[in-house]
Amino acid sequence: MTQSSENTRKRNERYDKYVKAVTPQSSVWRSLWRAFFVGGLTCILAQGFADLYRWVFPSWTADMVGNLTSVTVISLAILLTGLGIFDKIAKVGGAGSFLPITGFANAMASASMEFKSEGLIFGTSAKMFSVVGPVIVNGVVWSTVAGLIHFVIGFFM
Image (cartoon, rainbow, N blue to C red; front, side, top):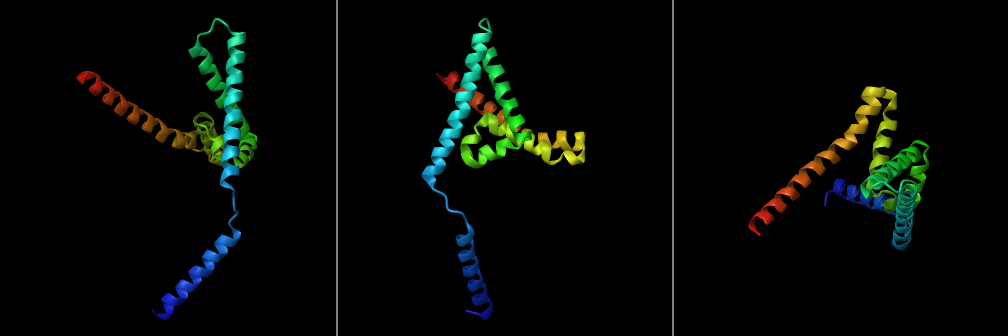
């Protein structure tokens, strides 16, 4: 071994030791419980809104109640992101706070807020769609693939 590679190996060992010393240790079971708890509370809150809307608007269809519930949960996630509360919830709840609908709303709002200094159009609006674009493209592509698979299976059965 050359002197330079020996020095590099020792430096890497010291760095690995340092990283292990400063990296916070987390309990897997505690993280899982917190994610389950926060995700469950989010779902209970959404179900509560749905039940409230069903009670207040008894003539509405299930689709209308579901749409209003989705809009409410998205709006609440965006509001909490803007107030800085969503980040605190995410720190405690981890993956449980990023249920598809709330996590997506948080990602959009965070991207918009981060670039607001660049202006309303080129900052807030454009950066919001930098997150939304890939999600929509993936949704369209994979639903098309699923539709084609369904069509082919239906064709042969």
